[in-house]
Image (cartoon, rainbow, N blue to C red; front, side, top):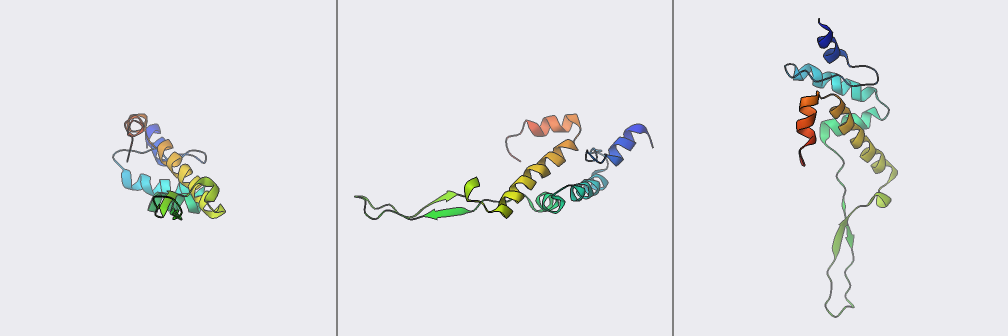
Length: 118
């Protein structure tokens, strides 16, 4: 195995394995094992496999006393309204994104980084 292949295959304790474009399946398996080994590994793994936490909509009561009655409205849960468990998952989502990005070669990272949406 060449030195470049060694880098792709192993990663390190502090860095996820680097994507080899010709071997996605082994890389994804190693990336998931790396994610599980991190602090909050179970949450990071969950985020990679199932997508990030989706904040719930919170109902706000309407105001019937106004001249024009206002029906019930909704807002997205703010950080202050999240439970400790939900906050941990949001943090793990950020770590999951970072883990994946660190495992991408520069050319792919540049293409992904320039995108506004997935």
